Each structure stands twice: as C-alpha cells, then as structure tokens.
Length: 311
Image 1 (cartoon, rainbow, N blue to C red):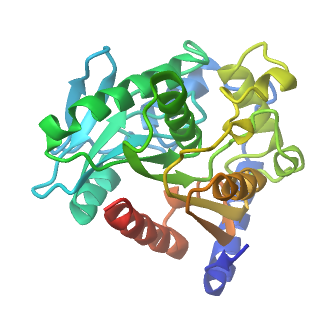
Image 2: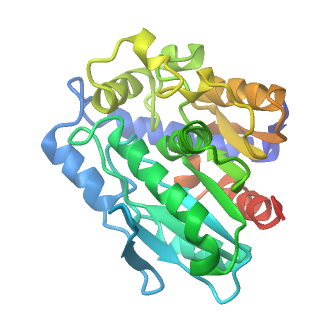
C-alpha cells in the first residue's frame, strides 16, 4: 500500500479536527435521520448549508426505461462517463454537483451522464441499483448514436462507487455485457455492507463512522441480516470480479471504509484487471467535498485517469 499526499498531512488532520469539533457541538442522531434532517440533506444535496448551483450546461433527460439523468456534453467528446452520486443511498441527486461535473466534462473531454436513481428509505434496495443498471444498458446500446463514441467509463463517490461496481456486475451476469465500460473510478466506497473491520471500529465523528454506517445500511437494506448483506448482489466485495475493467480506487487513511478499498483493490487485481489504489494520508470519508489541497490533487488525478483509461 502506497500512501500519498503525506506532505499535506498537517493541513488534512487539522481540518479533520475542526470538522470533528463542529460535529461534537451538534446533537447526535441516535435514532437515525428524521424527516426534517433528511429533507435538508436532500435539498442541499451534499449536506452543505445551501442548495447547489444548477448550470445551464446541464440537460435533464429521461432515458428509455424511465430513469432520470442529467447530461453534460462539452464541445469535444472522447468518451462518456456514467456518474453515480454519493449520499448513502438516501440523499444526493444528479444535479448536486453541476459545477464539478461540467468542469470534468470539459477538461477530460467527456460527456457526463449522472443518474438520478431512486433513494431509500422510500425506495430501498434494489431500486437504486435497478435504475443504474437501466442507464448503463441504455448507454451500451446508444452511446455511439447519442454522443459519437463507444468509450464508456463509470464511477462515483461513496454509495456511488458501490453502485458502480454493482452495475458492472449486473451487466456481466444478467446481460452478458463485458468490455463496454473501459474504466471504473471508485472513490471511498462501501463494498461490504456486513461491515469490514475498519467499519466496525471507527468512532470518530467525521463525515461517517460505525454508527452512521449501520443506520444507513438499515435504511438501504431494511430487515437484512449481516449474512444476507454478504450476498454478492448487495456487497460486491464477495462477488466474482472476473471481467472487470481497469480501475482506480481511492480512499483516505481516516475513513471507516478504508478496508473496503484495500480489500477490493486486491481482489480486483487477483481477478485479472489493472487497478491503481490511492490511499490519501489523513483524509476522511468524503474528503473531496471540502476545500483542501488533497481535494485539488485528487480531482486532477481523477481527470487524468478518466482522460486516458480505455483509449
């Protein structure tokens, strides 16, 4: 394991401490998200204080199958990036990162298709994965006609990374589609919903910890036991990963999902696909949401990977 960005460690850890101190001043939600808290998270998309900016460059569409997507198409298109947003399967939306997705579209010369998949608890598993599968199949059939390219990429952050792997597995296992997606970019995803060791032992009040993960899994997979959550259709860490595309897997050392990325990277590599594992020194879950030096670096690395993989 190679740890990156150790030269930024002091800044990163200081931000973590500041974040945790702020979290300590807020009351803990022992009973999970109430309706008001969930509504605020959904309104503000990434959990900030105000709703995100919607750019005119984004187009809202409904693909065949009835799933809503938000599409960004730059002047020059060398590929299509299927983006699956994070938010613990319970909040987030396709229009929650317009500025970031439009910048990526322009710099990496990618058409970006972000999926507005259905959210728990109103729509628990498998509703969200079903929607992502529909859009991925649509792209596999129509990307050339719609965007002038068959070079497809997939990725997302947190829950979106989990959904990205499930989508690739569903394409392979349900439809015999392998090779259509030429790269996967997976940011700090949960790949074992029965909980890896690092998930079970993380008590700090950062963006995510042991208790918040448990509550989220209960919303997304209500009534499931730990054993049921080890089903490869729920937790891709237990799946046969043969036929997966090259991947870039990223996580911070202060993330309860650290083990998930470490274990998935090893299994991905053993299954025969190239994988680049990035472990960011001191970074907490969701670190790319915040104005940090490591965030700027990570966005550049993401752009470079998506610009070059599968060409």
